[in-house]
Image (cartoon, rainbow over all chains, first blue to last red; front, top):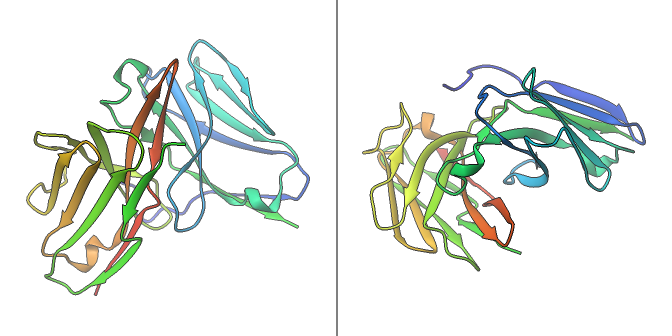
Length: 115
Length: 117
């Protein structure tokens, strides 16, 4: 059910530093994971995804790490920029259900980049 | 790329009135669309799964008679909030999957901010 009255955890970093955002997922059957960025008043934007047959995937300035043993995901952003300031959500799915099943979102982390 | 578009982006309505939110897939067909609700400083919570040509599937705790979903075509799903109350004020977001050769991606609309006064 929904969490009531919780505030998003906030990660505050200096411009140029690396950021690491963590996420714990709950469904051990999940095998497809996605990180989304959400700016204020907008819908989520895809950043990077990873499947359970991998433990690391790199994109442009971003890296996702997956630890299936402890059901943990992390998003690393290199050389964080002010434009990276947003709320970041991890999402999980069961790949064979793609299209029929909605993504399940984590609780989110607010990233604040100080100039 | 594939785009999911919602309309309106924001709406203010009086208590007791109904509000319709549209979700369109602009350059692809979607037999299934998903409706989420997001309260301030919280995550996206799935409300219902909209299926083209059949009844929507609602998540536990979501009143189907209050949140009417119609998916009449492969490119349009609508969510109608009936007899709106201030507690229905929230950010509503729709989503659809796009499939290509060797890939799939979930696209999200830009969201609709509903304020009930």
